Length: 300
Image 1 (cartoon, rainbow, N blue to C red):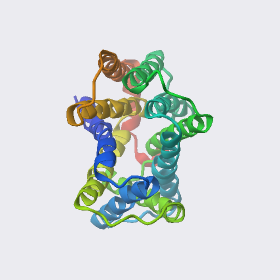
Image 2 (image 1 turned 180 degrees about the vertical axis):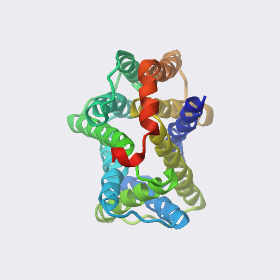
Image 3 (image 1 turned 90 degrees about the horizontal axis):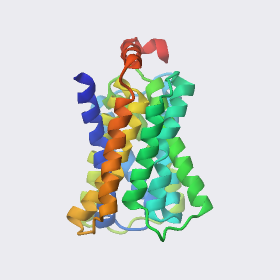
């Protein structure tokens, strides 16, 4: 029962991430991807730091920078390169390989078993995402493909290391450290590569507030909380919910068409998420629960 509650709570994060496309395109000025990413991470991180009033200590300064780079700075940077050089459907489909990468990294870094059902679920999820947003006219760009795979690897590594490196602090504090580090790493890049923002409208301010407070602070608190309680191979497939939410919101809010093939893709995505959780049940689940109950200091 507790695991199901943890899964549902964690699933809120990628479901909300699916709304960021709508908010970005409808409420934010176009052409400032790095600035938008920085303003999504840094103010939210600083706000959470002001709330928790606790800074990293010792080796956690370095670990926070590494995790902030993997989960935010490098991931968002490569994501934007992929999005600019590839059609949205191709970029999202390439990025959907992340659960497969998580399975491999979890085996290498955490000793987690590789289950055939998890592999099948991940491949099914990739297929479902492709049906959701891939069009027959989609073109391929080698740099965009490499950037998309690199972004998926970055987020996958951040996901697994967030499980391996669990400090003796709350998910709120852990999120504050990573968001602040990621935002600070993005700050000089955004200042160097992009012009200043134009005067902000009320809609722009509302969009930035939503991305920072809801799309970053709240969602990543839930995401890192889930990673502290669940195996990465259980959490990562929940990311398939993000493009699903984006497509549904495009249909519900923007009046975009929802084809029978896309509806079939939604069914496959939801089925792959269910199958990925089913794969974690059985004898190995007990060992996972036992590992989660061990003192954090024994696995740092």
